[in-house]
Length: 100
View 1: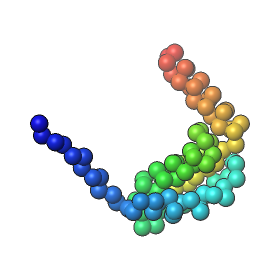
View 2: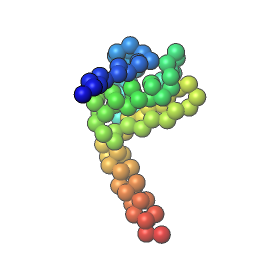
View 3: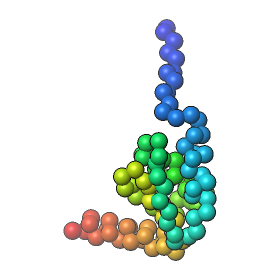
View 4: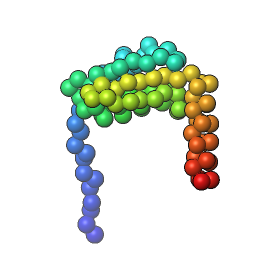
């Protein structure tokens, strides 16, 4: 039987490089405030993924939104009440779309 070895994934950046770039930038965001993070030398989508990973770990699921605009990412931290409202609004919109 042939033995298959798992290929190593080629990484674009060093382990933890994006996390260490993003973490100090999003640490001080208060609920219902926004900041804009420039991607700099990094890929915009890679920075957005790093922001999303940290935001879920720090604040929880459905507690933030991101928007990519050119080479920057706008991050908005939501208050728990706002997050719940948006979740219910999205669910209602889905029900209405299914009903049509």
